[in-house]
Image (tube, rainbow, N blue to C red; front, side):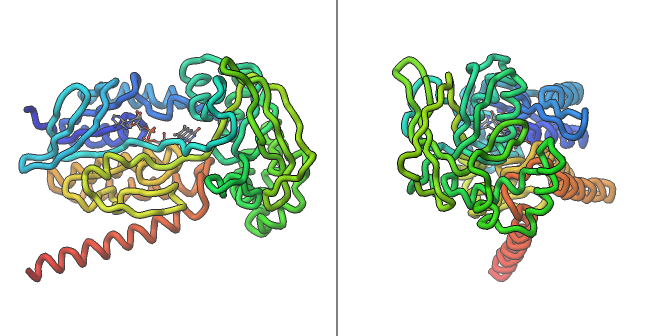
Length: 413
Ligand SMILES: Cc1cc2nc3c(=O)[nH]c(=O)nc-3n(C[C@H](O)[C@H](O)[C@H](O)COP(=O)(O)OP(=O)(O)OC[C@H]3O[C@@H](n4cnc5c(N)ncnc54)[C@H](O)[C@@H]3O)c2cc1C
């Protein structure tokens, strides 16, 4: 079995950039992705960053892909990795097309959507918001002509705008029902907190100002004065005092959404039901890191609400507490594509340093790459959760402390 220097699982921005930087250091790199094209979630991304400046994920993915090919990186799409095993000669990577071997392994498997159960969500024509993004932006197919988006969060608002750019009428963005499984998404106050981090995306100067004021206003106060008919962001009404009661349709298609008004605490106000006609519905429960392969590897995990859920415990240089195993991108916490790319650079260089031995210029490059991650985090247009930076700092310090303790114990044996 051929032994690669490095196998990367995931050809998203983190995996591709890691491959490029590792290959530039002379490593033989193989990248595997189960999707039919490279680019990961970049493929669905299209948004205006500042006036007339667009982030076109497909173009970014193409550029990274070309660079990777020029560097001789082997990329295989349509192949799933389902198991990992570490032996004396390195990692065994079990894929749907056979077993591969590598000295080092980088997991860059990204994030997944969190399911958000709503009455009527099995009717044909109900999609997760991410699926609607892929249909519209990747496959260039309109999922329908008019929709309601259920679930108000950073992702759903950003993608609702993309659907509008596809020529779809997005009637409104409303809340899921408040119930035991959807405590957060159905609570207007919590949703308000997330909206207040989003207003800098808004096309109107007034709303952008509101975003700046968010630091000084409590979500509780803001919910009380939130208008019943919502605020418009990207010309789409966001209604946090309206929740879905039921999606209506038959076993063929969605025909309407029944909504109800709710109080600031998310309690239903009886007698306020309304039926709104649509031909499809998008449901959004937010994002969580996709860490199954890391769990198989045996590395430690931490739960971090700020990062979207359970993440493989890792250092700032993207190393886990299992030897020869690295992680990068959204598997380490949900952030924007630019942060994922910057983390990929750190991982690629750190792996090269571990494999080839470090030197002054490589150390300098790693330090620069670490600064770049921080810069991208500071200036990210989409901040999926609050306090990402602070939480990461805490976890990195904790990782170093635990590693030092572990080494001390081993040296004492
Ligand atoms: C539905 C959705 C929509 C998003 N929309 C935006 C947006 O509009 N703007 C934004 O900034 N961010 C968005 N994000 C966040 C996005 O994840 C990051 O922007 C960025 O793409 C993360 O990069 P990554 O390389 O970590 O992972 P990804 O880009 O997700 O790439 C991971 C890759 O790993 C592959 N993979 C996973 N498991 C396996 C396996 N077992 N075997 C083989 N291959 C595997 C996947 O097929 C995928 O191609 C979105 C995320 C999701 C889930």
